[in-house]
Image (cartoon, rainbow, N blue to C red; front, top):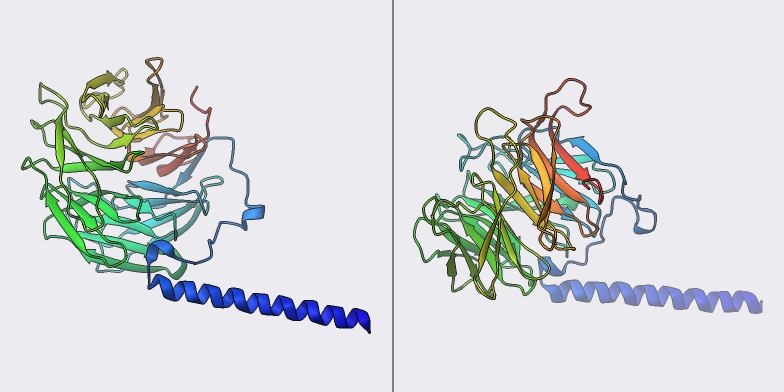
Length: 393
């Protein structure tokens, strides 16, 4: 009888604690007032956190199942890789606007999990970012001048229009969870409050700059490239909560030949960017404004159009990874040793382009826009590729 009484008391206490916890969650949800960056949603990992599969130690190549994979983003909290699949070659937009897909892959081994097809009123997603706080995926739509959000748990898409003809391109989330993006055709920097969906667009001080890549540095400042030939500049600003910013620009090439493409920040605060057809990656020192160009292109594998250094990403050791889309190589540069390690892909037409991201454990992820057409290669066509740390010596 005594044991039964004790058991009953313990059970009642557990139930009361459970109800209190539920009440706390409900109160928090109400207090958040729809704050997307403070979501209390359960993190739907590929498997429960305690049993999630170990990441493959061997390189993996997976078909994206859809043409022209472009930007990609990692959700390390939940174990997913997200790939924008515009289904076309943007120059800077596709010839027509049409709904496309965003692919979801496993971070454990790169295998395909699911495609999320856009509703018909949407258009080709180009770059993607994941909000680590709630797992939602943000993306740009250059063809329809819009910013989109995918809520994977509900398979729900939302979008908000930017200025007509603005052509939003690359995007980044700041430390407060707000979104910043480049607007290629109107030469502006866009801001979106991810809670209120307020949009602010600020022209660059120099007109006609065609901003392309954008990134966040360790101090929380934002940097971007200006891609127009004959301008050769990068820009920076301190993000604000209302979207009103003051942009400062820096010249990066006195010959004005450089067209800076994508951009990344190293752990030490140095700013690195790819230089497209020049075959360079370039280091900008924010403390001194010094600019140093490093040639990383290799012997030409094609008859024409030998090089376009496209993707760029810094790992935790400060190595600078890059892709050469026209020469179909992927490599990394070690600044302290002035050495580059470069690996050609099997097919010289694979076209590893703007999709390159480094995982925190040193794993490299990149997309091949065209992939391999070589007979005997296991994966044919557009692909997502995972190189675990140490794959490229």
